[in-house]
Every structure is written in C-alpha cells, then in structure tokens.
Length: 75
Image (cartoon, rainbow, N blue to C red; front, side, top):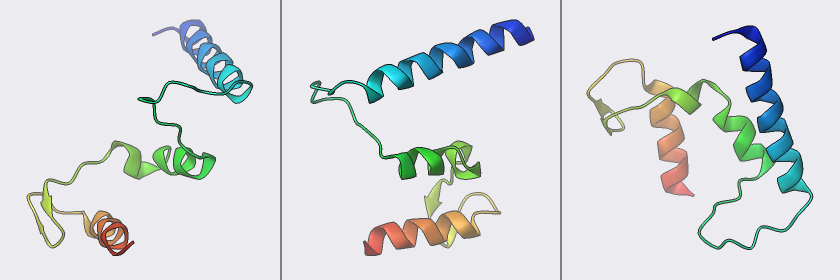
C-alpha cells in the first residue's frame, strides 16, 4: 500500500475519532471504550491470542496474557 494511501486512512480514522469526541453516542449496541482501554488495545496484546486457559495454553509465550486474564477474573 502506498504511503499516501496509508496517510489517507490515518486521516480518516482521526476524523472519525474527532467526530465521536464531539457528540453523544446514542446507539446502545455500540461499545464506547475509555482512553485507557484504547491505549491498551494499541499495545502488543491488541493483536495476540491465547487459546486455552491460563497455565494450559496451546502455545508458549503467554505468561503475561495469563497474568492479565487472572487479574480480569479477580476483578
């Protein structure tokens, strides 16, 4: 994909984000994530998967995913 096209996509995403920040979302079926959650989704965890359960995964390298899942379950 060309640099110009990528830049255009980024601009469109920024425009959408700015628009959403300036209005009230009244569509009940849409999730509205906090800035903290959006920042976390932009981390390495945002594109990882871990099949199975903590400590019993199908793939290696999920130590921190297991920790996050345990924290979420406790919460």
